[in-house]
Length: 87
Image (tube, rainbow, N blue to C red):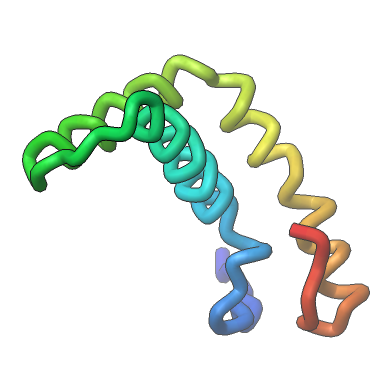
């Protein structure tokens, strides 16, 4: 059985749900580190990122919603002829 690959648009974060994950992680980490304002060294920052990732893993509904959005992402990308979408 042969699988026909389609060309993947270069630089297409609207088709890459991990971009949503990174954005959420950054937003939530910024909120947490802002109150009270904290300066982290490299090891502390890495530990905070890992802790946030583990926290997100305990939100399976979030990841399911990203996967469920793929059909709509692809449809919008097709309609936009590879241009910008709402994602």
